[in-house]
Image (cartoon, rainbow over all chains, first blue to last red; front, side, top):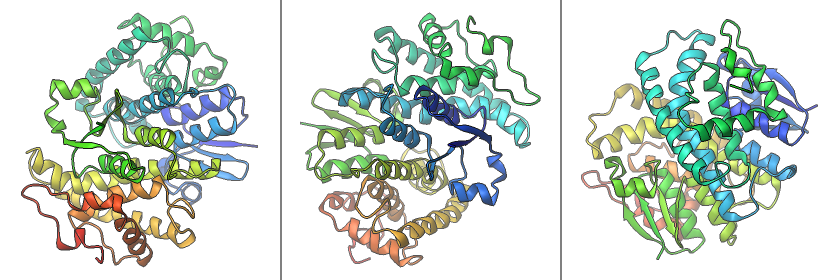
Amino acid sequence: MNRLYHVPLSPFCRKVRLTLAEKKIEVELVEERYWEQSPDFLRRNPAGKVPVLRMEGRLMSESQAICEFLEEVAPTPPLMPRDIDGRYEVRRLCSWFDDKFHHEVTTKLLYERVNKKVTKEGYPDSRNVKSGAQKIKYHLDYMAWLLDQRRWLAGNDMTLADFTAASHLSCLDYTSDVDWNRHGVIKDWYAKIKSRPSFRPLLADQVPGLPPPAHYADLDF
Amino acid sequence: MNRLYHVPLSPFCRKVRLTLAEKKIEVELVEERYWEQSPDFLRRNPAGKVPVLRMEGRLMSESQAICEFLEEVAPTPPLMPRDIDGRYEVRRLCSWFDDKFHHEVTTKLLYERVNKKVTKEGYPDSRNVKSGAQKIKYHLDYMAWLLDQRRWLAGNDMTLADFTAASHLSCLDYTSDVDWNRHGVIKDWYAKIKSRPSFRPLLADQVPGLPPPAHYADLDF
């Protein structure tokens, strides 16, 4: 049986969970207290990060590399376009969210509010929270600008770029950090993603002591 | 004419420069004072980062996405293996260096010592420098562990993983932050990369007011 070592509110784990589910690859989920850096875990991934996917004898890490691998071994349904320019645009946007959005927003809001609590590292730094709350507006505006020109973020088809963005936003939605009323096109886009069967397990995630808001799992948010 | 907007001591720009040179794609280099975030530059890349590649009417950003694109439009010489597992390993290691190594080492040493000086942001934070100097040892040990088992970092062929690692290490070598005597296999590996024609322009890079050490451009270091 394939196995994914993960934590529920990690956008990188969610990206891999969504890709596996879209491609109908069954996997057993195992929660990993990666911050304890147990020797067993470090043997699975010397980088000390989640997700780690155990699949047919392989032990794989780095979410983008895993998703590209899954796309190559299970091309149906495709999450990457057939044309070279289209694939470039998907990869550019995956990096946008996993690097820029992650550092400017996800680490500033989610990691301050949730990860510090879970790992008992202390209280949120209000300057970081303020900065993240400011920066997410710019990112939402950029997404809306893209979605005004395209049906999905990277073009007219749903791709890994959409699942990458939705992975980050869904984690931030758990802490009510996304203003869905800022842009109608983003709300419509998220409603489409949220209603996919692959998304359902994410909406059932619960962090002990930190219940999600009522709208989090609501398809009609 | 293709044009690359870059800064000399950026590992991400170097990775693209090396890939272009390996594939014999000519490009005009334009230094970009990205930290001034001029409106012209932000039009080229809303992420406000270098490198930006202008190529046949396209404006492209995000170094990994650019390198994957170049691999697809110019497959010779190959910088990615033909097999799926091999490509996964290359992408995993590219992420290792561009994410983990970058945050634990490059930002702590190079950005403290060089970027802060260039952008007039102040003096190096000695805690960061100390942390980077500590962490690079672990990364060199990991590289040596890989190179004990393989001719190149990702397997028996030279790939984008080697150029990604060499891009980071060459920038850190400019500030004498790499202990080449720690592992003979790493020194041998770097000597092979350093002697490639694609690497020569990097060895001629100069930051005003911050000359490189004598060994930096020496093929027999």
